[in-house]
Image (cartoon, rainbow, N blue to C red; front, side):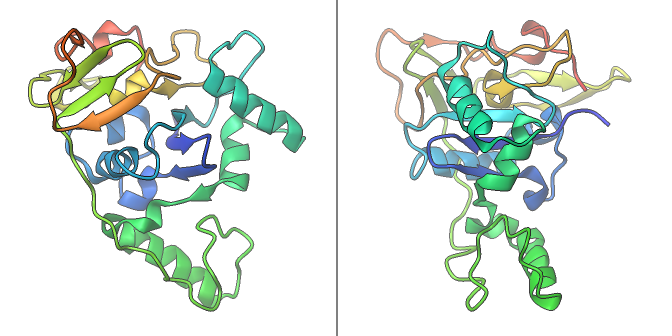
Length: 233
């Protein structure tokens, strides 16, 4: 089946799910440049999630004592206090709020889920934390946003999506669409021995249309699937 991923904000206890945007959950299935799931992330990074600790979390991940990344350690402490068994993602989907429904592009899938809850009066799995009396309040009012530059202030690096020409080749050797490297750069996958923690995980990330500060290194043609020793699932 492969590993499934969600964007998680550890500071705000929120996440967004690719299924809500009618996309697959695997790492490469929501990484193509310009998709609305990434657009929702960019909107959040420029507003509510600005400066927060985020991770593209795999559902088979288990943080261990060897993980020194501050974002992972914070999530691990929460999960341990939670006290129940399961993967890190199990804790997130149980205790965090899914904010996919803020976005117009997720309306079809999210509305379908809420209609199900209303029809069967079953709000036990109310991941959107909607009000029974006014379930659509505040939903579907935002739109995806796209910014040219994704900037890492910690490493003083950036990539320009207009200059990123990295592509993904599937198992059959067929060249697929151009990808945005941010999901891989921020990923924390499961226990696969060939997998690795994203190189930007835990760093301070900004999205902008303004040219990055002088002295920041342009990594647009450096970061990519084949250069980061990641086994595609």
